[in-house]
Image (cartoon, rainbow, N blue to C red):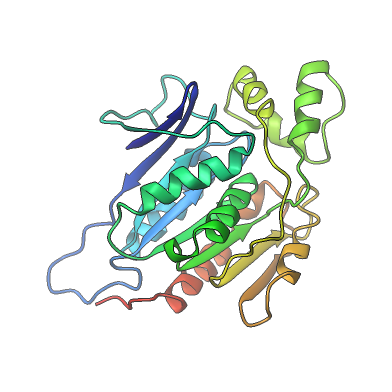
Length: 266
């Protein structure tokens, strides 16, 4: 586990090795590759990536998986807690997503092998920022249910005053395992608005459910990229919460990563 901190803002990365394979077996499609997974607001890696089988399926394909826990989202006294942390110091900034991206770029620089990013919701915003600012660090990007609208200021106001939450967030908060004081602390952080410059240079796969009310504007990000760079997928009868449970989506994401490997498995 690696922990990056700025005062009280821990950013935690847990590394999970691929599933062991018997000797003499052919290389798996993602053998030697690294996949970085960044969860969404009010969730955790366990909810977004473990319970939905993303981690286990990526491991089975030979990838080393790295799950990121955002500031104020790590659960106290949970099974996610591990020991042996290595700490970095994030710079003081008014641009939290860029600061997280900078820290993750430093972490990725310690890895041997290509890296594929998968982000969901605000995690997709972080991966978009990382791919845009550090293009040499990334082989591909999967941006799932990525809202271009910065909902965090309205969430902050609603949590402080009891006002109305943006569309879709009442259900997100109702199902969140993260204590509300932690969510209030995160929502009070300075999170920058979406920027269309610079843009990612790597291949990008976008996905969204057609019933998603949180990321209605994510298609605009897809339109910023060249047709031969980006792929858009929209899944019927899926919303912002249940999209990650799609087995078809997981399989398509793995195929996308394999297709855009810089170094084929050997």
